[in-house]
Image (tube, rainbow, N blue to C red; front, side, top):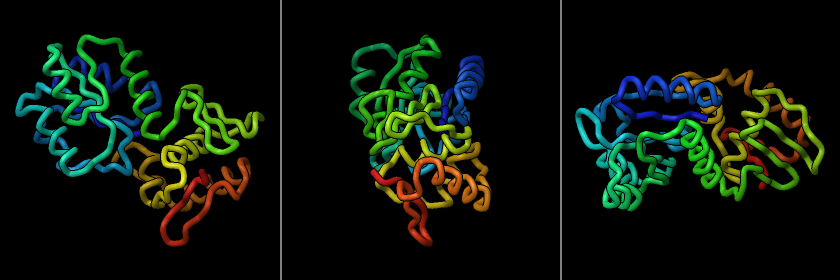
Length: 218
């Protein structure tokens, strides 16, 4: 999944960028408010990690603007501001979580998984969609209790569909989610992976909406 990191501190930014990549996330790292996107791409981004004290502006203003525009991408505030009014203001302005520096990378990763789980309307680390069970942390998948042998790309594809079960995801958007930010997997490759995934989990579980994209049956 794609993470947008907005953090001006060089040492912390490098550490987060490297650690999150090791956890399997694709990370875009920005250091200034001016470089942040005016609008969020809700269909592609999995989560935003937002520092509040940026050299050219206040991250809180970015958060408020995105929420006013109606963007629903999960946002976790990471900041040295520990005062209760700051925490309350961040949450009231639309932050999904608020993490005070310094923090352990493992805690941040757990919090990212938690907000992604809530976004997907899942109650635990084991995601359940019909007879399918997915464990994002362990990259495991089973169907009616029987383990499935999915390739890393097939698992990634299924997980992206599972983020929004019952919702049609455009083919172009899905292709962007499978590669680092700014790139996209070729449609021909996407169709091959989709065909292999359908064969393993049952073709009826993924519906093609002709001319639009794909839908994982809820």
